[in-house]
Length: 402
Image (cartoon, rainbow, N blue to C red; front, top):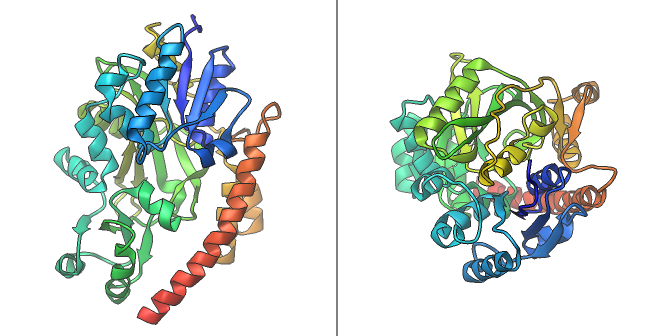
């Protein structure tokens, strides 16, 4: 295979570092960019790293930087995005960026639909995919309109998840009853648009993610799936401990849905098996690699490398089978989430140790590139302390409302 085409990775989180290490270990030249704070934490010896403007607040500057950077390279590079903000930016400016970079994305309308939880719910409804009951609540009048159709406990969650997580470090808030929801809705409304969603019961072990790589003709080139064992933040979040498994029902549901939507390039669909009726319920889609995608390489699929080969027109052989039973762990996140569960009596020390047994792939730790791991761990621990203080202040305000 020819590896002389460089790759540019927009993201220096564990997601982006997974892409970087996968490609650099094969001899591919890598350049990586992220905003200043993420750059300081995630810069890695596996790539030439730099600071870039924020894709939301510095759109025109980021576009100029990427164009000028590509012009300095001998060949048009492959472009990877590791966050929703960068995906949206690339999609929005695709017509211009395609003159300077190789990348493959579905239509921009579809990108917008999976970033907006309101539109995502409509996609599932249109394609008759079972999913949690969902209502949009823009104000208290709409809340009163829908509250009688919702069973409790339920979830209050943001329309645009990445923005909400930045402000509250939460992906969803459990509402135990209608009284709590009515009293606390005005408080959470200040942090962004909200929707009300049915809570699918059951632990993380019931959550599965199916990752795919479709070419421009919607031929399946790569397929990989796993089962969540722990999430961060606890209960509702991204994977902190995941195991590679293969479930044919989940695969059929995920692959057929993503193909029907026209999801060219890399994507991942999440489902949760509802213990009440045994059905898989659709949760969300990401139009990119996801946090634990690096496990795919350990399991014989390596979606990042397949995508590189596809972009550089090297006709990769489809990889549709995987090694099962290997775990991926984001150590600091797994520790913080497990600590919260232990405080609530939902996890014992022996269970925590048992979960870590077996063959593992680490999110960040690598003997030949240790600094991203240590910087990330320190940052998470500091943020955990700050968040605990913020949560106490929020709880005080909410108690006063009650």
